[in-house]
Length: 364
Image (cartoon, rainbow, N blue to C red; front, side, top):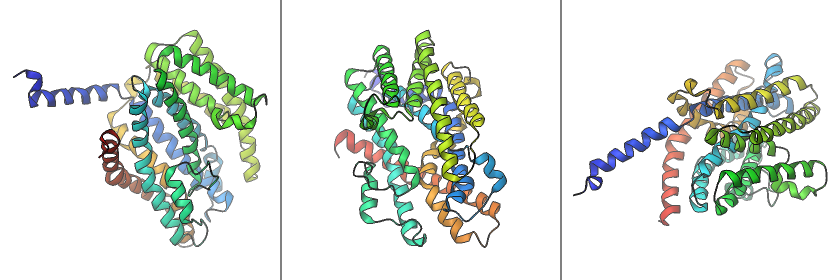
């Protein structure tokens, strides 16, 4: 019997694949995911919730720092550009589509159900949810018929899905360095045309000019990671940084207007530059010695944590805010949301992902 047909050989191959995956995994990205998720959670709990009236708690001093946590979403988008392109390499359209469905939907279905149930039963009308709204949200395409999100944070998923659609189109032609580079220049040009008003606003449904620079820069850095830095990639990343700063400062003004406070442009600029610098260092493999395998554990919880924390947390604050000291309630709620995220990941996301992947691959 050939050695390769022996069960022990099969186990050996699987072990080698797992070891190779561990070596190839960028644990630094997991650390960044953790940082971005915590920044967004703290932003909602400490700053935007109290300022918008969604939370009765108040953290004036901490809010001075927490108000910049929304930039964690910018980091998420750049990570997506990097990781999703890396995931699409050497994959056909079907394999890529299956990988994205399996990644996005299982945790989301559970999180949106938890949020809908808590909102409908415990929010006392603060976050009303209808069955039609819930059902539409399960598809993630509820933005098309303009049906509101069950939770405020879900708007980013629509941005991610539109980005995935572009990468899916790329996989039809085959993902190569040359094709990706052409796509980056084309997308960047369309971004500037939308911003200049040359293209109609409807074009932004595909272009996403508000955040395109992060997706584009992440993809360019993926090429840097795979094949090294070139002047052309450096120019693309530099243009993306310039546009990110331009749009970031303008958006900071809108955030300040919305909440009647000041978002310091210098802080926004500093954070955005730091995002680009850290991601570039990762792409250049400078940070590899800093990666730790255990980063993957909390890193896996960032998606369910992001999905489930906002409205559920606000309901807890409203229900217990007059009985528990603010910082105790804040810390306890963050810890609880971490446990809920862990439960979603272990009890639902992983098992459902396996079943869903098997069904999409085999039809049963």
